[in-house]
Image (tube, rainbow, N blue to C red; front, side, top):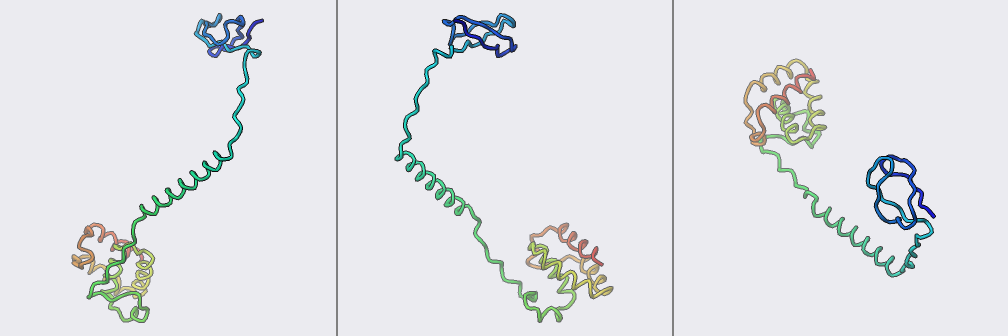
Length: 174
């Protein structure tokens, strides 16, 4: 009997004797080295081992332990929440709505810059809208304060170019 198969390289049909199965040879067409498969009647089916119920339980337990360890690792990697520093003494808090109407315009502008530096964009936008509602005098105040150097303690580490960008953003709203 002969073994019939296709060359892995050129795809041509190749025939080989039974005793060549499992060995290497050369394709008669392309002359490349090829593996000659075993004849189907010589292939032996390898029986699978029966499934072990203990092994299944062990795998489930290992998966649970892996998930718990992964969760513990994620919990350890979480950045702890840091309480925001208290507002400087010379800046009025914005949390009390009753104070919003009585905050001087210059303090509102300064507070806007501080909120932007903190990354409290929603609060900064709300305050910017309030500043813009005050009209022409507010725009003049923003331009005046922008031309000065702010030396607020909370802004000491913020580059002046970033602060200037905050002022430009506020001025675009007018």
